[in-house]
Image (cartoon, rainbow, N blue to C red; front, side):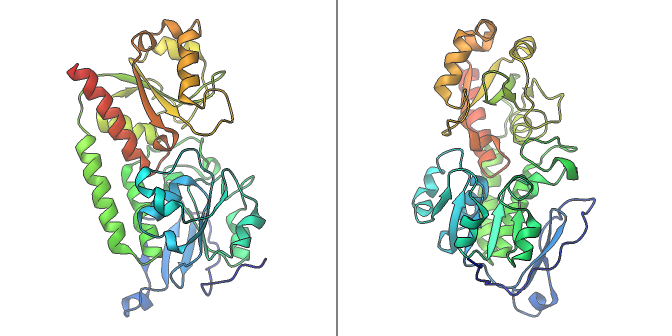
Length: 340
């Protein structure tokens, strides 16, 4: 099915910009004259122009979906996809009104059947080779795309994906930029300001150093575990609460390491992602704990002996508004142990 175009045009792709994404949307002369459209912004090396408020948006990753839902835009969404966890509880009712196109990656045809006038994503791998379709393909179809700046700012052009290396650490301000960008695209700037104010207040309230703990962040896989490196969402969490990530010497967001290396670095606590997906061993919290307490290497770790586990959702460890949830959960656990 050919997508119905609710906007007039998207400007052609420009060359990759050395600076990645800009700090926010740039209004055009028409906007200055009194109309809020078109809205033009630099987004991950592309100039994107939105000529009218999107009415049929599709978000291809959970993190992007939760921002749109938090902005009160469920009535302008026609599909979501690629979920690792249940939706945030306060967004459940709104999310129930939006069709889920797939739990994982949908086909391009399924996306186009919704007749989208905007497609958003959290990860370059979703809008790239091996993903739903690359941004050029959507451009050719007249469908504008928006990619989270958390997956391009501070990254080289060759590592724009969920697990690539970062040249610069992620900043919580980049998450806030995504909120402001999407609020501008949908012309709900006041809602964007309010959401960022709320997130910033929660971030500030949880960002108090209460421990000299060292942490390892385990996402998944029991054979060669994915442990967070220095500079993604885990870095934002560690810096906010004043702890040390024992794998802070690698710039890869999720390097696969050996259990011997985890034991050698001897974290005082383990942050465990409880994933609702069941694609590989070690997705579910129960399977993580069972492995840690039975494996001959990990069972001798002091963090395991003391059961120093901090449980988070997988989405809390992705660069998103859920990163603030991760800060709050880590901070609360450290406070409890400190006061105990």
